[in-house]
Image (cartoon, rainbow, N blue to C red; front, side):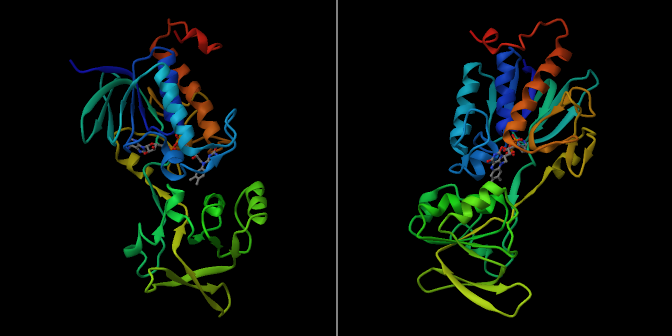
Length: 330
Ligand SMILES: Cc1cc2nc3c(=O)[nH]c(=O)nc-3n(C[C@H](O)[C@H](O)[C@H](O)COP(=O)(O)OP(=O)(O)OC[C@H]3O[C@@H](n4cnc5c(N)ncnc54)[C@H](O)[C@@H]3O)c2cc1C
């Protein structure tokens, strides 16, 4: 007979993983569904070797270590996990339950927690002729393995936190890191900019890449044009690491059968993380409420709020030990 879950968590990033652990802690029958073949969301997929400093009790943990720690935490009170399975629709049935659809299977659940971040993410591309053919070779959008950049000249393109983070991360392995940004000022945290100032990274501002050519030795020459000026300068590098941000496609949610209230693509939730659809909660980067800050630590707070409140709805008579986690384990 088909399993009927108490809770289905869609998205195995930090918020979804911690929600899964919290379901196990409170002995809710839960499944965690993740589109990628691995858990960990953005930290594991986008910056596995970058250090994260602002997760309580974990200062300096890398993205992958954080994902591994969360996976180990789920094992304390396991829930079912389905990886490499993108949810394509969620249908609310007449009896109030939900049918979850993916390409691989259908499942049913009494409640849903959407923890999809900003949806399946894809990087904003470098819009220069020839860049697409070099993708995955000289032109990169992810820096999953620092070793790929070892002893190389790397041009990091972009001026936000992610670009500076990547440049700083590669500083100790690369021969030379250049940071190319079209403005003189960087849109990043003061602490990050201070680290940049103290680094050996060469800042090239305000420049915009105009074209790129592949040289006989497979290095790449970026032709940089100074903003609001005629000046151009060549920059020869081995790799171009583009950090122009990510486009998210939470737009896919609009095609789902659930009629979720949203604001600029983010799901609206109340203080209990409840969405406009009864039985559906949402947490993490993909939600909006007044004062929302899109950080890992925020998602870690939202997960217990959502699970505790939905458990109260599912089992009004169940007493939950919300003040002490040791009462749920063992
Ligand atoms: C370069 C960079 C550096 C950062 N540094 C920091 C930092 O130092 N500190 C900090 O607090 N935050 C940092 N962040 C932000 C942080 O990564 C996010 O706030 C956090 O990952 C949000 O977690 P989440 O679980 O909400 O979403 P995500 O991490 O985005 O995870 C969502 C998951 O849902 C999955 N998914 C999406 N759609 C579906 C679907 N239809 N079916 C199944 N699965 C689906 C995705 O594949 C993904 O794994 C950084 C972000 C970037 C890009």
